[in-house]
Image (cartoon, rainbow, N blue to C red; front, side):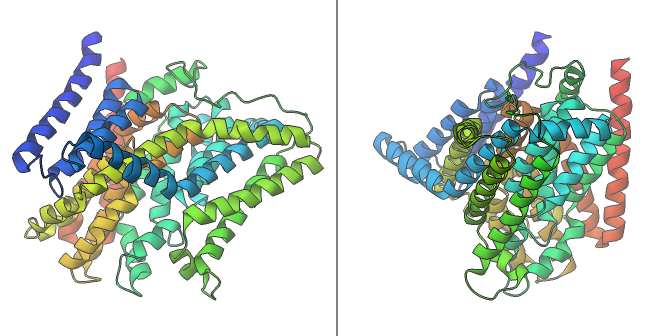
Length: 528
């Protein structure tokens, strides 16, 4: 048994060391900018996180390696770079998201204190009576919140956590359901912060049309939805998730016996709460945040709704909406006499404390991205893809793999398609069939790598939304995400030759279902 636990760690160590050796052969360590060395810091951070199961020190080591490489191993310059270009820049750039995290944490604490969460849990236990129902309800709710992935992760977690707990769905599985819905739905929704970001990289006036044309070929996002529905209906799990789900059936939702900060929900101040006391604040939060994103985007002009979303800034709009929703929620609960003013104010520090782990991880992850940016990984990727331009029919599959790798290593979807979309548009004529498929591959790979990466902001916030240990979430969802990624890769090879969305997507869906049946048969055979 001990050997089985050691082997994966040895493989990870071997990969990190091997990657370092490869970097040494392909680039000068004294001049790492724009070379393979630019991806070494995140590889170190991710490798250490998977080995040690401890995310804070692992991310910091990645930041330190990035700072040393960026400053040619000058100690004082390294310290200055990590502090100014890294941490200070990370906190200032993510301040809006930090504020929204805290505001949402406070709202969740209020919902618990007022009894709204408990009332909804009691109602759901009467109407959602199976694990299948709870899993599909979580998926459906996630699909409905397609405006922004950050908002999706935290809102779905707050609402569906009591439902999934009663259905004995592990926190790791809930985290997966949240994470597997958030970014993928935003990536195929024309009205979302992601669509706006993608459109901004295309030629003026063609961004939204290119985004819409790319949706049917976004295999990873679409197949992830097929995967979630199929695995719920087939009633099975595999990989590390199987252990978590088996333990959840016995009452242990966390498997390793460690809940996260802020997990213990306090007793409501009153028993008068009803389901509406959870539903109404969430509706207000959604409505105000959507309007806030629109308002920030239009900036005082007469833009239409879609144009405003193309111009919005979620780091401003979401805190704007969250603050209004919090004030309205406090007034509503006090008017309903569910909490006193003093009890409502006591929820503010409790909500902040609940979000501290997510804020710390997000700060370190963003700092690591800044270090990688100093090493100019974009230049290395552009050069690598330029050398592969002769393999036109295979380019969608190649671009998908490259996007997966960059997004996994840097933890950012937006940064990844920001690097790759201009390259794709330079290789193919705008609007050509192979260009559209390659654009989709770029977007799908960005989501896939982001989904797998332990330093991704959406991965971090999915853990926070489900109140799940972050490493538990990463380790359990990896086998699921890689399964869909492998099927997507094969599908892009087919699409590169066929250029027909009906055939490509149809084959991809069938292949997903067949793969799951094969995995289930193998899993059952091992169990017997």
